[in-house]
Amino acid sequence: MANETPEKDSNRKLLVVGLIIVLLSINGILIYMQQQKTQETEEQKEIIKVKNTELENQIKVYETLKADYERQSAELRSMGLTNDSLESRIAAINADLAQLRSFRNSSFTVADQKRFQQRAQNLERALQQKDQEMAKLKDDNEELFTEVTGLKTTQNKLTDSITTLATDKKELEEKVNLASKLEAQNISVSIINAKGKEKADAEEEYKAKQVDKIKLSFKLGKNEVAPKENKEILMRLIEPDGSALYNLATGSGTFEFEGKEQFYTVKRDIVFDNTQQQVTFIYSKGAPFKTGKHTVEIYAGGFLIGTTSFNLK
Image (cartoon, rainbow, N blue to C red; front, top):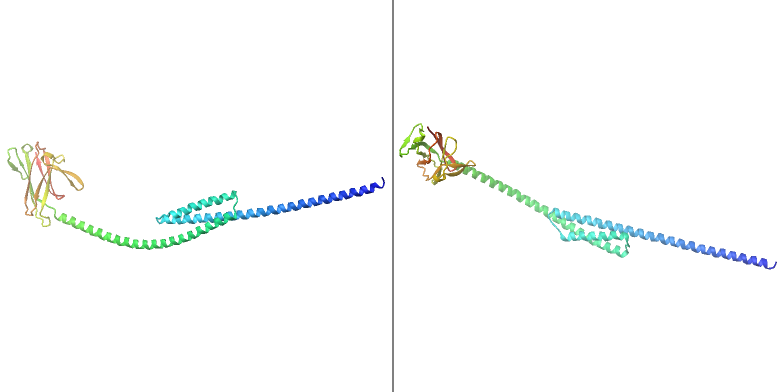
């Protein structure tokens, strides 16, 4: 018994030492594996970080491209132009931007990076080419604008000249028209009674109950400017209450004078021959005349050419 004890103790010690060595080995392996895992995790994080940075940079590139293409579109619209291919590119950029932003929640592979970088380069080249075309178009438009402005200036001057000539012509026509105005001279009024007898009164005062018809006579004064042609002579017989006698059955009508519509009592058509010809109106009212002052107005060619009055008692 005494001989076995030391041997057993020795074996026990060896077993304990072996266990310690095994535990230390396992612990070392575990520590190594943990370090490797930590290193891989850090490397993975770095890779993800790099990919995220590249993704965000690519998104910024496309946002810049979108802004530049929209600028081009706005400039074309300001020149009154449109470009369907430009609008198509803007739509394509918006679609690419939507896909790039979706990669924030998924994998953004190297193949994806190359694909979008190539598309961005193509869009950039197209953008620069379009900027050059638009710059030339602006220069051409400015040159054209200068030419058009010059033409408009010339046209305005020509229009002013034509307007001046038209104004001068109109003024001349108005002067000629005014100079050709006829004049009723030696106007006289007499009455014709129911028996057909004519009575004249130097003071032009008559008894209303004796009046059946009014006779108006005058001469047309000489006028070398007035053309020898048909003339329409209008006579207005205005009663004491201020209203003009008017009856369609006896040849009355309307005419315009100084921008207003007026009634005339009767008219005559004559051929003006510049011989101081006599013109006569005989008017029958068909009803008793009113007492009071009556006014007679004579018109021709848009002018009032004579007036007179008489009284009926």
